[in-house]
Image (cartoon, rainbow, N blue to C red; front, side, top):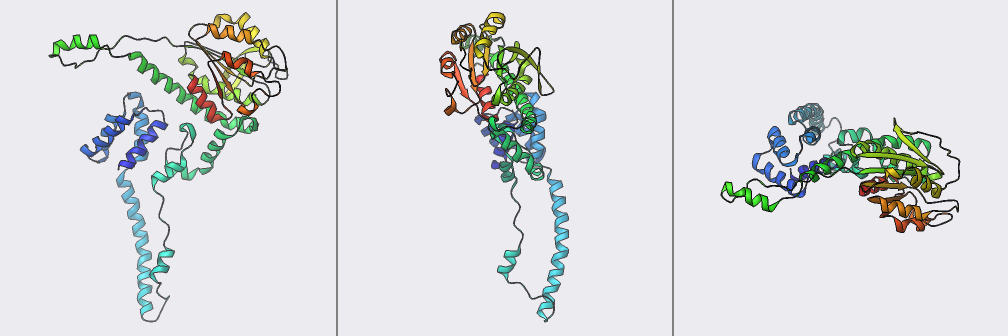
Length: 389
């Protein structure tokens, strides 16, 4: 039972429900005290693991998959035993006939052991086989057995380098990105709820405890209402980085309404505002995908015409390979942008070995950034976006 509870906790975490180590230990102790009757087990685990009622539907769905109805299993087992019993009766009759010299010869025990069907894999093993990076998994072992190709395909898409993506890969990856985006949105919302509560105010807590004989029964917290940050994203749509840019925009689009303001742009040699419609990038103005990359010119447009979008609470995300066709990089403008925003993070969809090769001028931009993160595949991109936000 302990292993099943731990596997259940892992499934909850993979689906976006925050469960701490202490809460997991409480769940094990609670089940040991309350018993394993199914509904008692459900409520015991819920009391220990569910902190937000909005997570209860997810908890119930994963609980039903991890702890199926025993009666259903028993009826299925009984049907199998009845079917197996008929075969066993025939075999026994055949054995008695063999003793009299008729029918098939009796099998030796070793031979019978070799002919015995292999035991079924336990649910925990199936669950481990179905697990994929970044929390993408088929929760039900039965579903995983039915759709092994789907799980394997997701694994392959998560680890496929962006420069090897085909049009079909991008199309299939959009479904994965939508799921990742929903989980990113839920993660940001949970973090905001925990931050809004603030830290414990010991002075107010001790003062309030006087009414209860000095027992701090009701902790007092410092008021903290952090304002949501603003987001500005610049994504390079030239060459092999176009697939990475489209998927990153699809990843952050579901979480865009979490920010106070979110402005999404793409560029080749000009800045162009975009939106995400049905998983596709919809430009809001002219965009020449066959132009020569010029990030220096993009910085001039950002600083000259969009400076009002940059403020002390702005997170600026840039995704690109910093290849500038040997045109002026204008790193001075990027420094001015950095001094104006709260944080500047550059995501590079190329392996580190290719940085600053050819016409790449990443070394001119990197010292200005607060972080430069390598993200050569979808799994690394999702991890980098979570780190940046």
